[in-house]
Length: 193
Image 1 (spheres, rainbow, N blue to C red):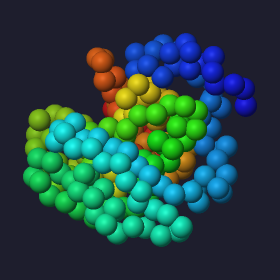
Image 2 (cartoon, rainbow, N blue to C red):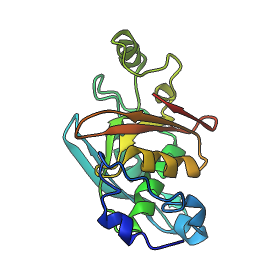
Image 3 (tube, helix red, strand yellow):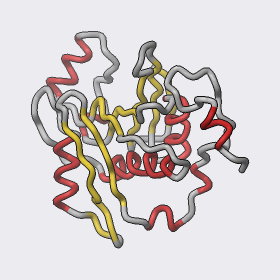
Image 4 (spheres, helix red, strand yellow):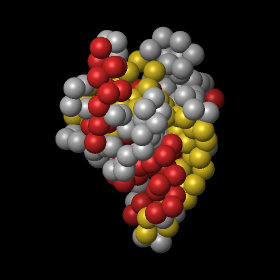
């Protein structure tokens, strides 16, 4: 794999960037067992509620139940203020994306746009014509919509897709935020919304 520095210096991470990184820039196939065995510290922010969390939820092969509960609290349905037990695999997906790009010097909190959704919140999104499926995996705590501020959603989505942990949806939007990706622990599939 070539050096990533020329791409970092040319703005490949910017949400509005037209540059497309080489396919192996963030190749998840490059991770080895030590990557997955290291302690898992996840830094997240939830703009809707103003909450931040920076917590080690997994260490020495064990899930920290208190940290897990705090993560589930941040991933709650903010509209309904309902907490749900999230699938640990989706939490691992968030961590892996953040930890992987951090290896290349890109440091940013995971910005959560949607975690668990109650049936009522999901129905309201559908009624408003917003991207939401009737049988969404958000309803089961198996999906999260997120971004890493400053990292183009295409790069982030392709990285998460490479983990082969479930579905990945790309939601590109015009504006300073630039869109987000959906990741879930359902069947492997990819779509653009």
